[in-house]
Image 1: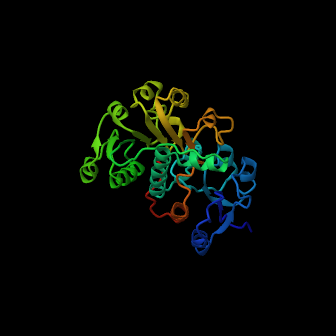
Image 2: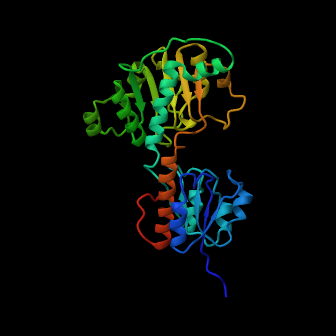
Image 3: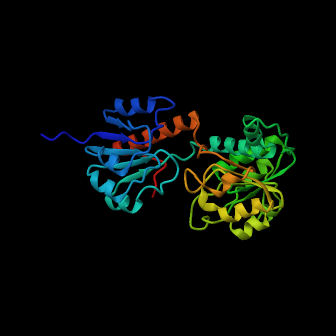
Length: 320
């Protein structure tokens, strides 16, 4: 007699960093749970080795290819531990009738707080001073206050709104650009929606929080970089596809931009990247959503989505 497929494979190495309650929920429902024992991203071959009997995958950034889905003959659901699904072969998932879910709304506070931290780091040269001291140098760069300055938020969605609320609390003027402006939110928080070119021209700090789509890839073009206010700072804590990195590098070298902060670059890690030679650039390791709180929320949501799909109950965050 064949044993029914009953396995849920969890791939993100950080899934239980904030506790194992999501695992217990799945086990209590009667499923066998197999976790990533390598504590790193899995290769395709390693993933294939875990697929026998798998009916659900909880995935991070690992590429979930056609081959993987072909090998997972009993697969019913792919639950993304995160908000983007471009690492999943959606055509194959639709072809197979596999439900794909994700975890929106779990990370925006963490991303917004990192954005503010990067802005402060740029304004006061905090990482540079720390590095100088470690190198036995005593340099006191003159920074700027951010109170009273103008921040331009490109993409006022969930993350952008959280940045806006914090910027207003600090005492900044907030400009927003969004193709679908939320006027009620703007009125409540004193935010002004403007066209992209006006935002770039008037903002002391520009931060990007766009959703990925055909009309947003390459949004900050060379020409738009030229339109930025002289001496402005740029922050990108979302995706590298939005920015012409060569144009930004040239603007930094020419001192048209005063500083830039990236939470994400291409490639990762950015070994040998031109930005490494500049002392007015802050780089972090795709850390926007790497907080205990976000990990806990994403793990709980990903587990609940997988369980709902397997039990045939409603899921609010299904990829169409």
